[in-house]
Length: 276
Ligand SMILES: [Zn+2]
Ligand SMILES: [Zn+2]
Image (tube, rainbow, N blue to C red; front, side):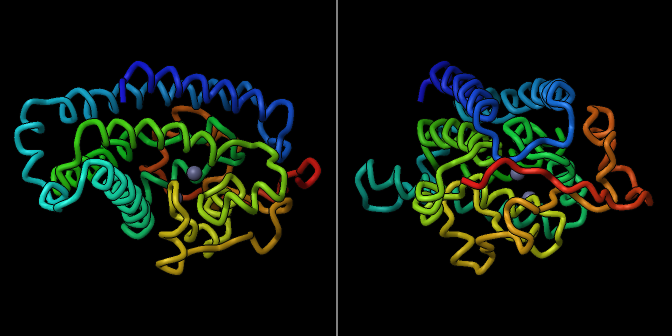
C-alpha cells in the first residue's frame, strides 16, 4: 500500500471518528476534550517520529530486509500470492495478540503499556496514548516477526495502515446501533469490546487482547463479552494511576518510572448517553 494513501486514509479516519464522537457519543467524557486532544496529540507527534524512523525508514523498505525476506517461513509455503497475503495478514494479527499479552504479563513491559490503560476516558485520542518506549519495544517485536515470516513490504505496510485506522475505531467513543455491534463483534473487536480491556477491574483488563479479529481471544479463552457492571457503568483506568493529572504529557512520559499513587481510587463513574 502506498504510504501517502495510507496517511491520507489515517487522517481522514481521525476526522470521521471525531465527527461521529461529536454527534453521537457513547459515553460522556470525564475530562475536558481540549485537554485530552492537546496532550495526546503531542504524544502522537513524538511517537510518529519514532515509528517512521524504526518501522518504515530503517527496515521495511531497506535493501537488507528485501534481501533476506525471501528466506522467511511464509515463502516456503506452496501457495499463490493471494493465499499468502491472507495467511500473512492473519499471522500479523495473531502476533499482535501475542505481543499484547506479553505487555500485560511481563512487569517491565506492563509499566510501559500501563500508560495506555491509565486514560480515564476512552476516545479516538486514546489510540495515540502509547509510551515511546512501549512503541520501540512493540516495533522491535514486530520487526523480529517480519524477519521470521518473510512478509512482503506490501503486506507489512497494508497491515500497519489497516491497524492504524482500526485502532482509531476500537477506541472511538461512538454509538453503534446494537444489531450492527452484535453482528460485527462475532468476527471483529468493536469499541464496546475493547473498552472491556480498559476496565479498572483486573480480570476484565486482562481479557479482550485481540487487535482486529476476535478469534484469538476466543481461541485462548481470554474473551469477555461485557463488563460485569455493564457497558454504561464500566469504570476504565488503572488503580493508583487514575488521578486527573495523568492526562498531561509529562505525567504520561514519567509514569513507567513512578510508583502508584496512594490517593484514593477515583469514584467518578462515567455517564453515558442512551444505549445503542
Ligand atoms: Zn492492554
Ligand atoms: Zn486500548
